[in-house]
Length: 263
Image (tube, rainbow, N blue to C red; front, side, top):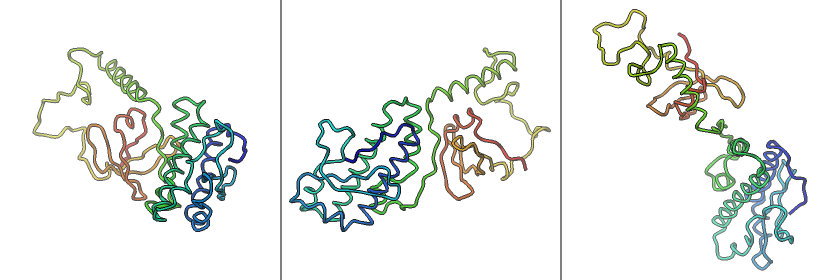
């Protein structure tokens, strides 16, 4: 493997990943013929490397590092041996799967010093991109970028925020106790009470009420969404681009990430 400085930040690790990934894609797609020929089964154990520091894509087929253990994780060993007796398409797919495994081993090797929050942030950056296998097998477009989802570092955060909201509501209503309103019912409302008339302070629900603004903490921007359906835990929304996404209803509300648009 080439000697390269270790990436020192999450952004550096991500850029290293992007460069190596592009090199692997170039080998398996753009230069597939050359790559196939260079993996001669008569040669010693060979590995496919995506080179670091080359965002336009650079790759090499060579022997693994002589140092034991290696300074960095090596790709899978002996891809040239597997070529013999395999269909070319299947062999390229196998190389793609092992290439993804190598990329993931590298990013978490570089990110070993980070805590759970840092690792979640790193993975959310990487997971924007389809895998090498998905692209090499035609399951995803090479130019596709997935919507980056804000990592949830701790489930307890949403639970704590919701508990704080309940506590604040109980304080306004005179404290929690045997007469406290059930979860989801405003203080002073009687859930079992039925009425033949609508309340004077209410209005009929309209289609416009299903359009909301959703906050993406990644970029601090609000996006127009339409609520398609919801249940006790999840809410499915549709973006103006036509893409759908399922959200955790409790986390979205507790974190203040959704705003209702007025008519």
